[in-house]
Length: 247
Image 1 (spheres, helix red, strand yellow):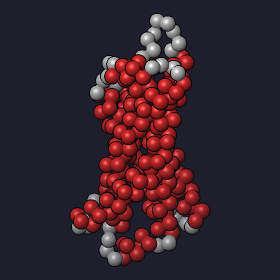
Image 2 (cartoon, one colour; image 1 turned 180 degrees about the vertical axis):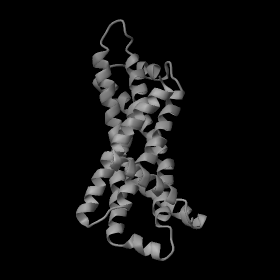
Image 3 (cartoon, one colour; image 1 turned 135 degrees about the horizontal axis):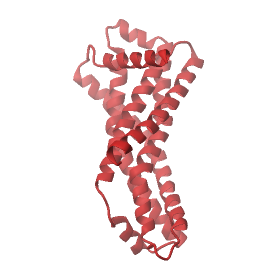
Image 4 (cartoon, rainbow, N blue to C red; image 1 turned 90 degrees about the vertical axis):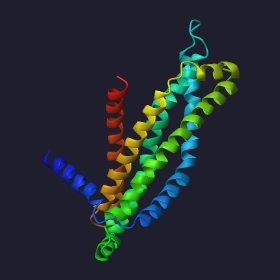
């Protein structure tokens, strides 16, 4: 318990240190733009692939489980829509991004730490944590919602293609179900979760990488811890936000 509290305190001081001795705004702007480009282009492919197939699988499985004459076939479409918007597009995709982006951040900062590049920045009078970590957090807060919105559309599109190719329902029935009883707040709820996930992934992964101590083996351990802790925190935040906003 004491060790956990010590880590929480150290993490809090780490986050506070991001804003100490800030650099010029143009420096942060340039670094943030680079991080956004790296995150977006490096993740769009895997997000598109997973979302499309996930939507198709959800739609076909929903059709299989809703094979009741008293349930309209259009229900398959709105079940797919709500499943993608409320949970899969945000939580599942962010779990994937935690493995991809989180491990990348932890490995990058961990390598910089063990090769003394971070120490070199400190000697030059640069706030290393602010210069290296803050642009990553801001970039994630801006890029993750965009990726999740893309995931929503592709997931629903994947469900549409899956249903049509499997002969589950007609195109008109699917379109009817997608717009039926749509609640706009569901999108807002999903994006709120995404922003929290983005902050958790980047901050926890940066913390693990920044305080890596040792050599190549410890860099791998920091990367693993970053992914495990980020995924755990995502699931905890998922429960808390659902309880607060939907219950």
